[in-house]
Length: 165
Ligand SMILES: Nc1nc2c(ncn2[C@@H]2O[C@H](COP(=O)(O)OP(=O)(O)OP(=O)(O)O)[C@@H](O)[C@H]2O)c(=O)[nH]1
Image (cartoon, rainbow, N blue to C red):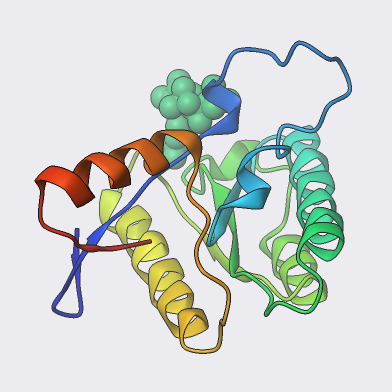
């Protein structure tokens, strides 16, 4: 992906599409929270339960980061309210999303993935810009996920190196 003239390799991890964890009660964030450079937490504006779930995930991110990465700059988190097009079925007001994002110091946007992919693209572009900004102030080296470490190893031996996010 190219952003602001920079060529980046992105690794996207969707915990919801992963197989269930062997140990019940283990957080879905257990693994990515250790290496992710940013988070997108999505809820459905027509589903109050999904908003409560998003709230709980934001709390988990905050707690996990405080535990594992003391002293590091906050990682950018984007709270996204999807299915904005379902006006008549709306259960979560935009203001509720805005207020949660404000309390948790997140970026916030309502989108309709079904209507307009450019809004989704803009969410990722904004998040990545914040990640890049954060890199300027971070002294730690980025930790890769397992698959990324292997890809990096192979790249170091055989390929050209690119900046990764
Ligand atoms: N009306 C409307 N429907 C949407 C929108 N985005 C997704 N959907 C529908 O919501 C359903 C779930 O979409 P998926 O793409 O499977 O969502 P997902 O994020 O992969 O779901 P998880 O399995 O929970 O991770 C599908 O029927 C989509 O067509 C949207 O913006 N508006």
